[in-house]
View 1: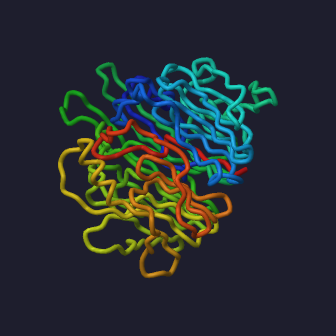
View 2: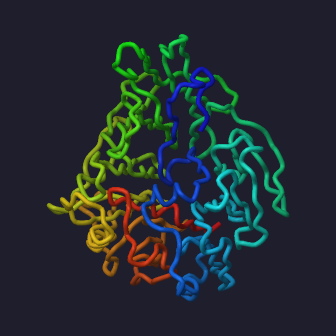
View 3: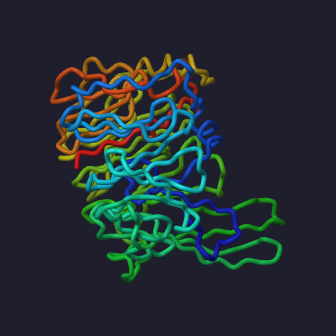
Length: 449
């Protein structure tokens, strides 16, 4: 994401809220070394690996599934019972995303730090697209299946060529799922020769890309190198526009700290210049139901197995309550079903380990299970046979849940027992991760368009 022009040369990071529910988020091409460092596990398979295990029967009629297996990217076609490999085993593929109309697929390959790839949804016709000549930065599908690369929008032609359709303002950071409300982050600062600056950043909303913007929130920021106090104020860290004009979520970076391992303060703002409602510190995804109810993966501890819970937050008036789980258990990875009536989440045992060795991470994942919570119920209900579950994702019709467990992708269909679909994902025996965090969501994408 680009910095505001007024902040050019000032080291203030601008990011977007993470998670599938953040429609304004984009993907940047990771280098091979960044993948290893950020995800904490090797991307090179063992010499004996010959390809993933795939259950064609279980996925029949469930659309297309793009998934990473030991560094390579594959597409499973549920209609044709066909598996296509897109990236070589040593390529370090990541972040596959299908277009909303289900016709196209974007992804990254660790071999190319300044490009992404565009292919048909079945994996055919893959082509490399340079980032440097397309505005750089984010790569994200818009609701109408146009592709936003940097600040330029494109229509994908039948053969895969990109046709420019327009540009978006450089300060656009998020938009509503219906593409009818837009959030912009701007900054106005005065700088001096010694590197000091003073000013403010603002979060603005508008009902169209070029429409009149209204300031919703602003914060004073400053830096005086001579004072020795460092950056002063809250720096913008991300935004998410809620559906049904229920307001905006935004996170801040107090003191412009480089360390966000324990999460950043998250706020819900319902009206312009209103009082932000504090949702605590979070580094997890926030899932938003179709009626604007939030499921916030909260908890500020940097370790995956400490201080994690799910808060259910409702609008008008803003109020939150923590989802009830048994003592000694954690809750995280919330995901609303399309109808907004059921929430999938993961529960696991709270631990006190202060290392994240492969054995520690693997042992903790063995305590994971998938749960479903119906709105109004006292507590979530266990789904049998889901040991090791993580990263639940709903089908478009709300009848199935795709999730990761025991290093494989699994499918829970209409209340039947889960079926193992495809894997392995990681290198067997290598379960290391940064403070126990494994970014499973960057390993797969599911399309049922």
